[in-house]
Length: 419
Length: 116
Image (cartoon, rainbow over all chains, first blue to last red; front, top):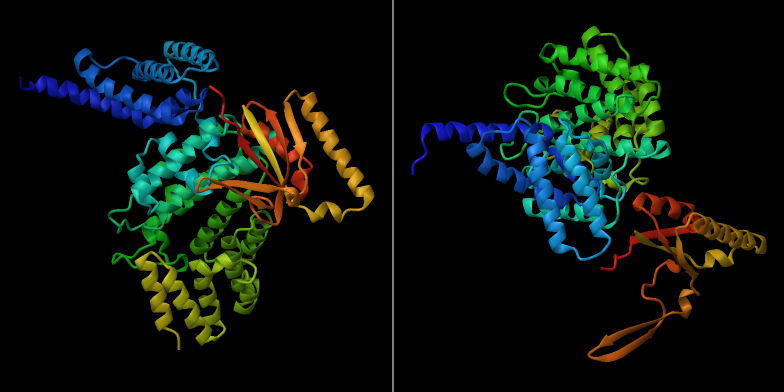
């Protein structure tokens, strides 16, 4: 029998409601379903089944008043059924009983308890491979599918799926807790969560022109996670630092590429292309972070961005202040990126030779060999002191390591401009 | 959950210590064991004899192949273990960090299969 137009409308309504729930509550539902058993994969399967059941049921019986509770109940049934079928150990039965009671109580409430913070800490746990933390968070807290995540991180979907399964298995088998870390461990563990969110943001950032059609932009999802961590940890300054940093970066997105898609470095960007309301937002967030007392890596990075923007808008040379900020950053972060950017800042205050002296050494960190910004910075400084042959070599290295065609083209132009 | 904490260290490290330092070391391990017991998490532990006393056994083509020496020839060798029962990985990691072995070697923390 053909669908009437009413049927189509009702089915659309069901899909829209389901999509809306997925967008705002996916992570919350997963976190709640997985918190006790620490079995994220089982929670995902149960919830997927629940969504499928919803799309079969809601067109027939209408959308429920509380769709989250409906989905939670459906997922609960499947979770418990699956576990009962598979498990024979005595230990599991009381667990399942507790889970069942808990889910029943939660379904009766209008608000489902938010366990996402614990879930985020589990995703960024030190026992999880550092490269997997951002993809994992995107999958279980945001609800992105493995294929989309794979595309963003330039990994094959099959490889990404396998790695994500391994990470979730580790959470379950190794006993990684769903817990907000205690006072002593909170700072480094929160750092790991923030690093993951920033990694997701950075993946979207390297293609600001959106020229790589196959590559998915994760900016929206990264902002979702950043806003979420700020909301869940309102007394902590570093999440605010991260959010401010992301806003500063995002505000300059349109200025990073010319109309032809050419790369424009910060020094050459047109401030009128910057998103001023977003910059004001970043300033306000950073200011609020300062009132919370404890300085941290992301707040300093945001302050550096703020200083760059201030210099471009006012013309006032504040490089010495930027060097001081990098000194503070280098004291808490041993990342080569920081050392390189600090060296470039020192070059602005004390000349290119001083900048070169401040650069990290290959002998101390062999990874720099494969690091494009290292070679690009060296090339820039070497060209400024007139060491053209060495500068040429460095530009060649940088060009060979650069993924982005626009940046590559820019470096090639600099190379060609050498005397 | 049960976790096995396996201790790896350079064997000549112990020999290089003075008698006093060795006595301190022993005392530290005793104190650690006590702490585990008091916390009610201790299931078992042992110190193993040096890697040179080890022998490996393998079946090759149905025949027993016995070789002198430890399984892996590396700078850090397996020296002992603790078996503990705790709520989750973080708790196990906290205990591992307190173990004197963490200061001069590496401790692997691995969950034990729960018996069905």
